[in-house]
Length: 226
Image (cartoon, rainbow, N blue to C red; front, side, top):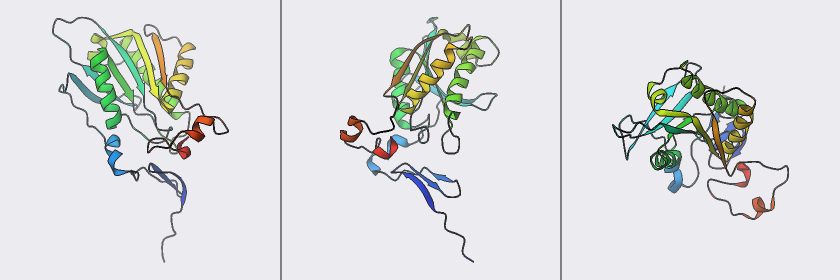
């Protein structure tokens, strides 16, 4: 007896296929010349171009990618923290993709800041508000380090928890909005959110906007992704 066909329920062209049994295939099927942007970059605890990276998992099971810029021995200045939320329509990308590694390694070096980027849970396996919950959990984890309740000696000694900036692109911009709103209702001392930077957040309307209809599609932004 043949196994029943696992029918396709939904697709995001090039990015994601959802099957009837609930399984998800995120194999890249778009133009091969841009696939490298989705390649996973392993962490490196040695400095490459003055930046080291590490992946950690908190006691609550939240995985984070951390970028630390190289410091001189006599440099005692504490570094601001950039808390980054990756985009991907809440269902696609990950914190260790090459496209994010290139941007945030460069930002950590140029801004002399620590970058912390949680691996946000993705739909449809983890429906909203899972990604927003993870973003806020990352902020609370930073607070717990500032208070000495969680252990990350380098961050505790070198990060300035009074200068935490939220940043995110696309759906990550939505997470910035949600985390900032929650932060406004939550005592975070001694941590302070000093700023929030949503980069082209995905605040979509029920009807297609003029720009959505007129702007040419690209492998990284199609109408069925909006």
